[in-house]
Length: 199
Image (cartoon, rainbow, N blue to C red):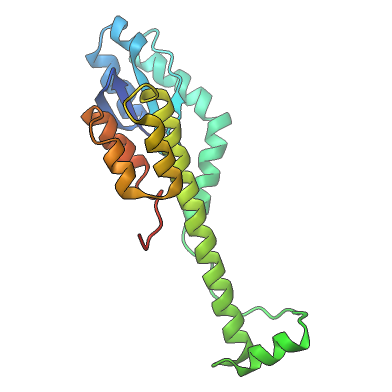
């Protein structure tokens, strides 16, 4: 498959395979019987959402169906995600017009480096803060999706969710500490970016 989707497969509370979707499907198709395959749950590592896989037929048939499915609807999404990650834009100065009140200009002129340097610094700081918030939200959502599917009836599930959204890593880890090891490990992996950097 042209764009790699990484996922993790669970049979009950145990991980049976992890890696690219193609690798996971091939591994479980070869290792598990039909009954186990009907109980298998595969989760997208980036969103925490389950991936529906039709295991009927030979491994080649399963992979062909996945290629057809993800080559159209989800394939576009993968392309957009990978396009966002490819390098930084070329640096260059572009002039433009900025309209500010006199007090804003006075403050900008008094800053070290002048108005242009100060504006660039302010924009970079705002972008960094926005990117961090987006990363936190995405990690929280992925952990939430997986927890809802796999740990909804686990001890202190609701308390763990509250700690996750409160950004309290210590309490979050405490609440999931007695969960099944593979579930706990995967939740921690999905929630790795769910807490502020300065915590």
